[in-house]
Length: 211
Image (tube, rainbow, N blue to C red; front, side):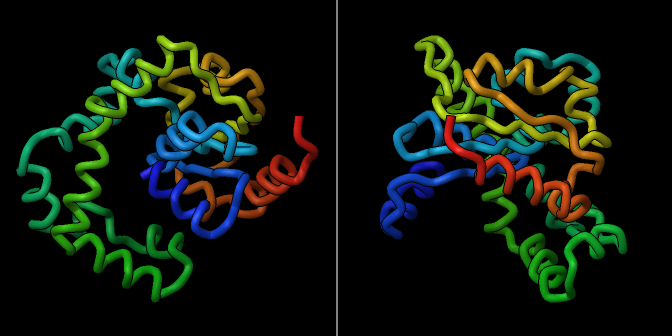
């Protein structure tokens, strides 16, 4: 996915650019910054850590809270469970619908959860975690590769990332020399729940002079 992003930006004529990734997208953003460091000018990671950092800290609390990571690794059964009742699995309720912002987005979301190919693709992303994702991150760390550009680390203050692993900035400081950021007062859906605060933080980060 990171290679696809790099190829797209090159095709569009962008020599350098900033990258923002939330949750699973944070893993793609990290891969992009490590693989094409001459292209990524600034990196913002929201509610995310490298896969290897999660797995090395895995204990009963993590396994209980993020049990879906391990269930999704199993062959076939997750697909069957999800597609048997997508509404129940993905929590089709008024709160989530309100976060989507409009009926068109909600309809698109529901359609995606009913598409076997989409569900399989989502699961394969998780399945890559303890496989190629962990292998590449382990190789990066052993080789001493770091994110060269400034890194903005934001996390949801009402979610459980910091509760499980402590201050995410301390972990990211082992992956990048210039780490900034802090918590945002919201739940996991940061862009939907705290759009103004998030937009302000991103604008300040990407709009400031390099260095």
